[in-house]
Each structure stands twice: as structure tokens, then as C-alpha cells.
Image (tube, rainbow, N blue to C red):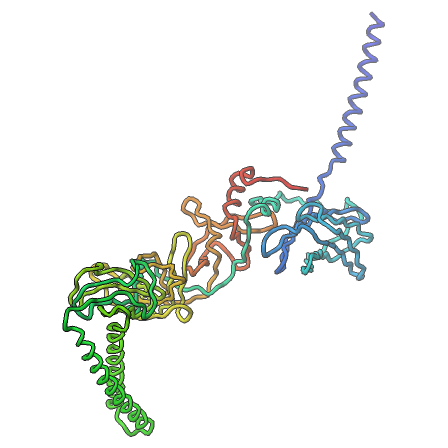
Length: 512
């Protein structure tokens, strides 16, 4: 019994000693556990390159590996080759450089810095690839003598926002643009109809009564050239004498034109000497213009009544303009009276855009600058003095539509707009402002909110709700929610939204 008690006592003493030793070791381990300092992360831009780099604090004679992500600013794709050099320049002008000749992974270069002196040093990272040589100056950093000297941050970790890694950005269509001030034009969103200008359409009518005979297989949509023979009119007996009458009338028109031209020239000479009244100048000019118009009309009628064709039994009708056949108004073989319409010809190379300006928006129209038409998923922009002519603005309100008419003449590129078609448009009113603007493609509609994503770091983004104003072409005004100079995602914003909701949905994972 005594023996058993002695063994028990010894066992208890041994256990007590192990427990004390365990507690001491536990305390020792707890003391040795010290949080490692957070790596430094920096994003820097040049016109050609974007650098997102992460690296550990610098310690004397200790390695610090850079994870330098290089991206082309024109394509937002990674560097697949190149040379990268990281240099520390100390206050004594001693410079230590560390380089690699190729990326460790696509877009990621990993030079290793082992500084041989302590103190503060300027850090530069330089990339060389083909014609691109860019240096990113990242500021001043301290090289510590030991890890123990590195201060630990007592602050709680800040929210880094939305994480969207470079490896994710490089795999999709992605781009950013700097929010900056641009010249934008105020516009009115409305509807418009395209019309053929009066001088770009012609209804070919029968000069005499007779039978219509087409010259060739022409139908609606067929292209025609100026002075192209289209149809014959086989006239009734005794009606060809009209041609002689027209030739006589043409001769009279030529004589009258010569007289009015001479009179106008004489008055202009007197005007230069201040020897004629303003009224006489105006009358002379008007008479000359009327004589020219009458002469042109007679020439056109005689051209239509050309009987020099091999078909001597009919009068040849020619197209007075280049264009295409819009309507056939008389069937082949049908009888027509003098003046009956036969063919409607239009030239759609030029069109009028008749814009409906709502009554409530009329006050905005001051000096119309152009119009933007919506075509399915794209748009066409027409600017005054470039490919557009402002004709007139009739501010009289139509009692049926409650709109005024704003008319532009445009060059139809290349006949992509259809005559008589209606389009959704933006009419530029004349007001021009310089204001903060971003690409329209930057905006994501999230439950009715206009949302953009701002790149605050190479792999971190912030969601911003913005308010918008006027827009011109691909750009739209931002009235609140953004500041000038911020990098806004202009392509791939929806992918960033997915990354915010579910990182797995956007595809995550570092290559390094």
C-alpha cells in the first residue's frame, strides 16, 4: 500500500513538471508569433503602360520579390515578353538595380531586390519591350536594418472594395478611361422622317398623248443614269409638230437669256460706281435668274422629246437626273394623256431629315449643330459644316403633332438611310458645354441605377452611383458621383459587377 502511494506521488510530481514546461513553451510560442507586415501594393500609369506591383518591405541583405503586372494601355492586354528592372537610388546617389529578362508568367515579372545598404531610397521600375521603354517612378521607401524595425500597422484593415484580378482582366474585353472634361452638345431626343429633296426627285410625265413602251427591263429600285433612255411614247397623229414649236420656244428663250444677262452685267458695272438704285439691281438679277430657269426648262423638255433614236415610231423619254426608280406610274402598253405621270425617279444620295421638335423643347433650339440617328444597335452622326447643311427651323407648331420642324440636308452614307423612313434621333440644339464626361459603355443599369466602376488600384474597384446629363455621340455628362482624373471601366464593367456579386462567377485565381 505504501509502495503504491509512493509511485502515485512520483507520478503526480512528473505530471506537474510537464504541465509547467508545456505552459512555458506555450508562452514562448505565443511571444514568437508576430504578424508579418503587409506587402506594399502600388498602381502607376504612363501613356503606354500600366504597372500594378506588390512587394515586401525592404530589409538589409534580405530578398524582396516584386510581382510586377505590366499591361499595355492601348489594348489592356498583358506583356508577354520584355525586360524589367527595379532600381533603388539612395540619398548618397548609390544605385542598386535588380532585373529579369522575361516574365515569370504572362504579364507578371518577378525581379528580386536584395539591398546592401539601409536608409531611404527612391524606387523606379523600368520596362523595355520593342519600341516601348517606360519608367514608373514609385516614390521613396525605407530599407530597414532588420525585420524587427518594420512598424506594424495598428489600424484595422481597410476595405479594398471589389477585387477583380489582372489575370481576370486580361482574359476578357476590358478597358478603362480617365474621366475628363469634354465639349458636349445639348440635344433633344425625338423622332424624324427622311425625305427626298425637291431637286433630287423627278416625275417623268408624258409630253404628248400616246402609248407607253419601255425601252429596257427597268423596275422599281432599278438604278438609272442622267439622260438614260427609259420609255417611248408613241404619239397620236399630228402631234409631233409640238417638237417644232418647242424648238422655236427654245430659240426665244436663248435670245431672252442673252438680253437679260447683258442687262444684269451692265447694272453690276453701274453698281460698282454707285450709279444705280438698289431696286434696279434686284430687278435685273431677278430677270436674269428667271430667264435662266425658262431656258433650262425648254432644254430639258426637248431632251425628253428626242426622236433621234432608232425607234422612229416613238418619242424617247430620258431621265433628267441620276438615281433609281421609286415608282412606275404607267404600265407598259397603257395609254396616257399629255401630262400623265409615267415614272417617279429619286436620287437618295442626299436626303432631308425632318426632325419633330416637341412644343416643350422649342425654346432650346438656338443654332442647330446637327443630328444623331439611331440605327438598331448603332448610330449615325451628322454635323453641320461637315456632311450636313442646316436648312431652316420652322417654329410654328403643327396642330396635329404638336411639334415644330427642324430640317437638315445630309449626304446619305452610302445610301444607308431609306427615303420616307422614320428614325429615333437626337437633334443638337446649339448649346455647347465643357463638362465632366465618360464613355456611355461605362454605365451599367443596376436595378434602375446608373452605376460605374472606378479602378482605385490595379486589382481593386469601387462601385459608384452616378447622375448623368447631356450626351454627344459615345460620351455622356456626369453631374455627380465621379471626379476628374479617375479611371473608369469603359469595357468589361458587367464583369466587374459579377465579381462584386460572386467572385467565382467572374473567374478568380492568381497565376502566382
